[in-house]
Length: 364
Image 1 (cartoon, rainbow, N blue to C red):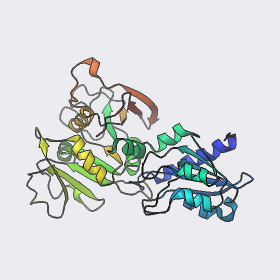
Image 2 (cartoon, rainbow, N blue to C red):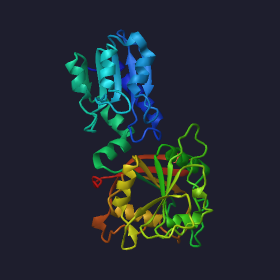
Image 3 (cartoon, one colour):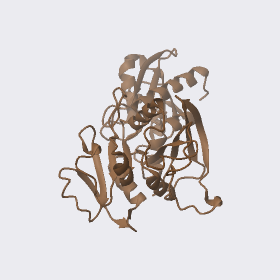
Image 4 (cartoon, rainbow, N blue to C red):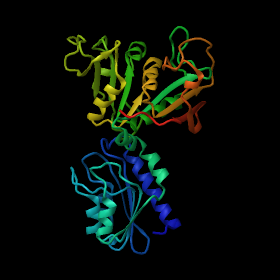
């Protein structure tokens, strides 16, 4: 099926709509849909707003009504072919009388794939690949999670230009500017869960809830504290957002009544990164935002479990103090984790660099 400039514009709009669901659809993907009538005019738009709710195609078809008959649907992900909490979207498109379907990315989920074949069997023209790279980038957390069987992990850090995450006395407020700190809340809001370790709990008493983002779904706050040394008064244990405390199998948690606990076995005194990720995946976490300090970041990097790095670099120098990244098991320059920089932008007075590893992340 040949594509036109109008097709590209419609799919780009669908990708923008899909992004509105970031942070509120897990364990489902973000999906956007645009429907045009037989003359090419846009008659319906929709996006997947929350897990268990109508899919993007259903929202768009409801908006289009009878105008969808003989028209074209532009969907960022291959229409699903299975009945879960909602019905199959491929069938909904067929029943609405849509004549053509452009989808950007094929569905890698074996339970849902096959929608395109179902459409074709019913006489609907269906083709994939339109703006596939853009749609894949917008849905990267869910796609990575489905393919690897573990959450997609973004490691965020803030540092001075010489790579220090705090001064020699441990003080770190504030390395970055207010605009960068607000930007971090946006990234939290696009995630299913935010993770820190015991060192950050002790040093910063972080809150980890999203502030200043209208309509945000609060992510699950996860604190890894193997010996359960956290105080009941810790800010992360308030009721602003749900919290999961990850502790060693034998940790004494009698001082933490009512706290949601995940007990995991320790390996050399540490919780296994992939053990933790597998349990979080089972809980529906698809996009994990790693905000812990250098030790936790090093453990995730050593485990090959960092899919994206977002670094906020402040125009400041400290010369001493902890580095942004701790021991990641790398002893020789040949073992350096090489990254592709996908974006470098000014945020206030800081520089935000986004990068992804050049080697494929490890499966669980």
